[in-house]
Image (cartoon, rainbow over all chains, first blue to last red):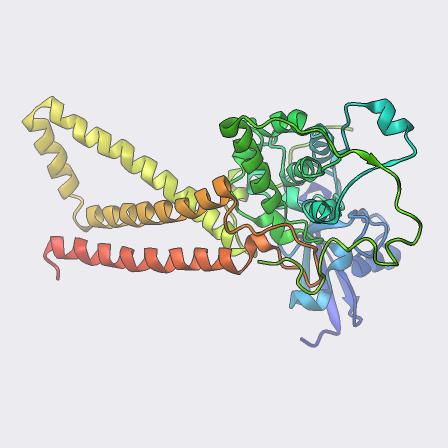
Length: 271
Length: 151
């Protein structure tokens, strides 16, 4: 596609569509276009952004009908000279492209996204570290890459129907800690997932994984969490003790190859 | 901050799969066929209930149904397609949801990303189901046309 000019069509507060004409530059992202509009055409246009490189997760918005990070979306990849931008669906609009992410964040905190240990004095006072082996890291590392951009939450058809649904991000994070051998919060979290607005509401539309900019694959995490819930219900599984404290590895140990990387990057474990 | 309504949420929004993955289309079709089957179940219960009202009521119901002409067969064809798709896709969903089959294992994400839950095996299952259902649905249509004496 040979673009020299593009039209940015932004759905603004109050339901009005604003059209901005811009000169296209090679490598231009939708965020670049929005920045240019605000700096040169319309300083009242509101949107969130920060890092500009897909790390902070602030610039999530609906671009050509799909939730995407504006900073990671090349205008040329959209294949159109009119780029339609809307706020994330399923969330309340504060102004223009800025949405209220409080409901999303409250679901995240609800599932206790942190390591839970019975012995807090041991956790906070020891100069040693909890043991976690390479193959144990492989069980949860993928889900640890979440940048909380809320794209999955916006794409999920169940969230659109049920505002009390935990949502893909929160359940993926719950599973991330349940799979962590250092964690002792399995019992607490499994009851948060095993409810009407929890894992049972997911119908595997897979849109969460489709839009995730970091391949966290929440749809997979939710099904793995559901298997854990079934283990509790059918096999009466309960929590195990977390991994023990061990002395920290000597400095430079990883460089010397005493600790294997958790994955073979060539193989990637894909299947 | 004043509370405002959620932007583009609700039933219509959840049923729009354009631009999304093929599994999202499966989700939408599964929902729609489920509603068709519930509608058929209600109509079927009403129809068979007429038997308890005597032969006259039953004959009236049957003549009302037959008066629809080809529409009756089109309706039955839709029900057949709905039952086929809902059943076949339901088996895939049970494999996904209960056993975690076709979802893949946790991986180290490597760019360009390709989620394993929407990977080759899942796509193969979705398209196999679609192909088998379409063939059986076509066969059901021919069967219904033969019943009408058209072919």
